Image 1 (cartoon, rainbow, N blue to C red):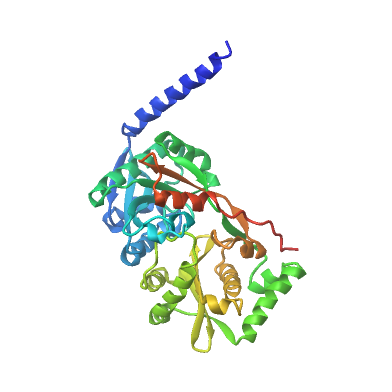
Image 2 (cartoon, rainbow, N blue to C red):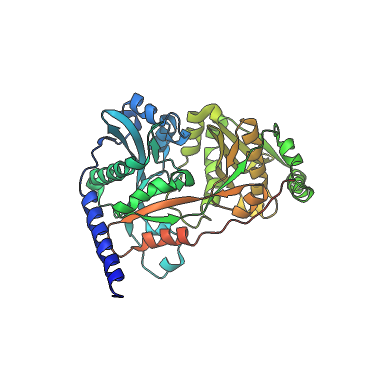
Length: 403
């Protein structure tokens, strides 16, 4: 008798595996349009699904990735239709990754010359947030996830002409979609929690950066003012620049970006020189570009993107050697808060890295997950490096700098 329950569990598990296998190998019942460029899709259909969603799913932003994105990345897209109506959109990236791009201790003793893998990312490696999937307004999400899985499968199969894709990732699923996204498990995806996005809620009482400063406790306000004093004492100034000056200083700005990027634990893609000038030209008034100067020398920059009601502290770069003497990074973070307030946003998204200084600004963690699937039983070096970065992430500290 004691063996009946375990036996029933095994039978149930086997039945589930069989059913999931069958589901993976039959069409979802939806129709699809697939494209290599955003402008090849019907603009009316794409906008009908995504217009309410993130700027990072807008054609003007996606064109930047196509025209000035990393050299190892190609964009691809899918629209999902039910009864001839577009109900969901997919923006994905086919990425060729060399093991040399990974900063993994485990890979140092292993020959890595020429070793590359392809991965398909439903989402955006150049941003954070659910920027790979958009559902049409007033549509139930849960029954659409099998169609999302099929769309990703179709994109992977189409991409086979460029080589086999061993690894697929659905990137940055927030809490609001976490429950319905569990449908991906039926398609052999595995859920993993990543480092959280640090988010600062912008009080409606804050009309200027000084209002934000006044809301801090004396301890944190003193620390913030000390950062400003040290930067001023070093003869540095903050200045907002426009597209023409960004283009003129593109090489210098890119060098500052590389100093920051080179310190990242995982470097799957690297921005080319043209990315920031192209982004600034496309986004116009929806982007703020601030530099920190000492005389004629640029010591750092930060970009802020207006994504609806959310301001995004996007790319940053700074002179790491000078940052050891002057709090460049912290001063640039303060500038982003000022941008968010002046842009009229209700929240500021600061990303996953440097959780401690962002917590001291008042940002709190917003959990996110990825879903991964690989077609080989033994994870290769790249997948192990990626999983190490995801699993071994920093826990956000608890800070409350406000009165």
